[in-house]
Structure formats: C-alpha cells, structure tokens
Image (cartoon, rainbow, N blue to C red; front, side, top):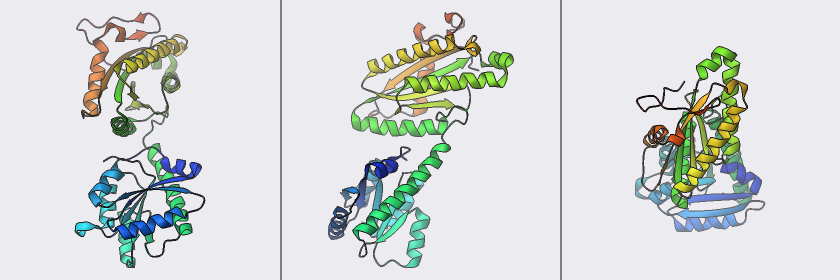
Length: 327
C-alpha cells in the first residue's frame, strides 16, 4: 500500500464528482447508503463497494478514490476504527469516514484518534448531510495535501526533494502497472559548481540550480517526478513511458535543452553535466535505489552520455573510465 500525493479531493470540488469506496460487510446497509448517495444534489457521487475488509484495504491502497467510508462493524471481530488506524500507520492516503451505528462518545473519540476525518451514523444519514460531510473532509484533505507537499519540496528550486521523489515514483510505479506502461529513471549530475561559487558567489550557484529546475520543468511533463536530491548538484527524474524507445527520445530531448540552456548562461560557462538512465517494467518489482544506481552507473557506459560542458561539448572521462565526483 502507498500514500497518495496527488490531490483528487481538489478535483472533486471543482468537477463536482466524488469517487467513494464503501467497505461494508452488511449488504443491506450498503444498499441503504447507496440509495442516500444517489439522492445527493449538486455533487455526482460514484460508489464502489467492498464487502470484505481485505478487499477494501487493497482497493483503498490503490488510491483510486476521493473519500473512503468504512463501516465500524467488520467481519472476524475487526473494527472500522482498527482498519483506519492500520491504513494511517501505513501512510495510505484518506480521507476516512467511519460509518457507525449507536456508537458511544468514547468510540467516536477513538475513531478520531485513529485518523477518521468524520463519523456518520448509518441510521441518520441524509443526502444533505452526506454532501456536506464529503465536501468538508475533501477540503480538509486538500489542506493536508498542501502541507504534506510543502515538506516534500526543495526550498530553493521548488522541485521534489528526496522524500518527495521516492513517494512520487512509488505512485507512478503503481499507476504504470495498471496502465501497462514502463518507468524511466534519469539521473543528472551537475559538475563545476565549486568554481561557480568561487567566481559568482552563492547567488551564482542559486541561479544555476534555479535555471536547471526551470529547464527540467519546461521540458518534461507535469506528471513526471522531477527532484533535486539532498539540496545539491544531483537531480533525478521518473517518467511513465510506453517503452524504452520513447524514454530515450525523452532523454535526448532533455539533453539538448540542457546544452542550450548552459550555453547561453554566463554562470554556466564552466559547468558540465552527466546523464544516465534506466528503464524498467513495474510488473517486475525493483527497489528505487537499485534503479537509480543503475541510471547513475549508466553515465559512463555510452559516449553520448559523457559530461557536456558549455565550453567544449562532451568531455572525456577520467583515465579509469569513471566520471569525476559530482560537486
């Protein structure tokens, strides 16, 4: 299971569509809820039903729903509160609404502590109440998403940081598996930044990093994961592609754009970069660090991926065939 960093709740508000997953073992209670949902005005509600907690947990983990509603009474002695607690502990994105019946105040407190955004009594739900609750938890989730995203961004460039990159790549991998696509991972190292700081100061290095971020963002798609790792000179990209050929075309286009940018940037006169890539099928699970290491190792396997300098084109490798350490 994985958390979800995209913001479908904001789309729900703007598009007036709510995709719900209802985990309810009692078919009669589900039919009752679905009847109420169909009567909601001003908000088109799409309901999926899971009649077993295991099925429901897997469905929620796929992240295809805007709001997750979980009945407190589950089979085998499980509780909805316990399910929510487990999902939150595994950082699976909500929001979660607990569906209860005749719960005590202390039960409500326990549900909120577990991570429920709201509680609805099955016997008291009305179309208007459901609509207002859905909008409220969606708005709350949107605020949480923004807060979460702010902790996953590089302060200087606005790109993803390491944490955000790993999370976004995991989500892209899950989606690529459903869409039968491949994932391409690209590693880029900037070289010569010490010399830039010596000549132009910190403002010069900031200009290079910001320019790098703008070039990457303007060349790649908005759905691609673009990151500056460890607040330094290492950048990484993950993109969904139909096949490796399409990914290599993307890599080639990006290489040209970076060359053009460095060539017309005064501070970039002594800056060079290395690029390496790896493409894999998400149906064959691999740890991201392994793929990223493969992409970095690929920097020296192909002469076309040797370091490019704004002064002299592609530079030769060191005598031992490896790239110099990135700074």
